Amino acid sequence: MRHRAAGFTLIEILVVMVILGLLAVTVNLTLPDPNRQAGQEAVVAWRRQADLGARLAAARATPIAWEIRAGQARLLEQHEQLWLALAPGGNDKLGQSLPLPAGFAVKHLEIEGQAGDLAAGQRIVFFPGQAPLFRLALAGAGQRWRIEGLPNGRIELSEDRLD
Image (cartoon, rainbow, N blue to C red):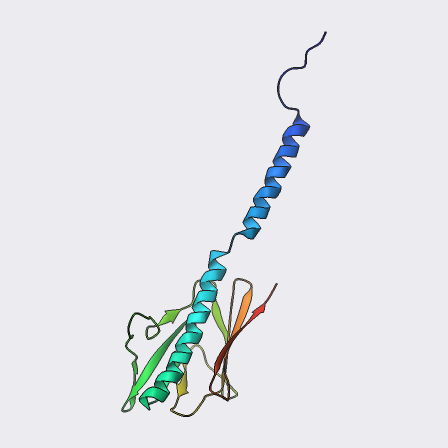
């Protein structure tokens, strides 16, 4: 009588490895992408900062500018003929410069129908009682967002997936 040696066959080992591989891929696909989430949080913060600029211009009855550079945005307040960085208020960071995460970029800026020069930096100025029309396109991590200043004064954020 012949006894089979204890152990696994090559086929059994390969089947187990394939099953483990499929499980690993499934788990990896269900986990959130931290870079994508950081980008989305930054874009939401940019929209909130623009909205804050519009509200402050109305509340203070003074022009407030939202300055957009290649990867940063900040609020400026006009004092006489100078634009000065808006001091952060309370616990928020909306008055500070907000950078985009690595891999994210401003793709296009249009103010009142004119293309903006991102290298030089552009200012979207909120005057009391006046809503600037603008369109800002941001992209990164397989996503694209658009922040728009509408004629009714609202500032909208929309997302376009690039998949």
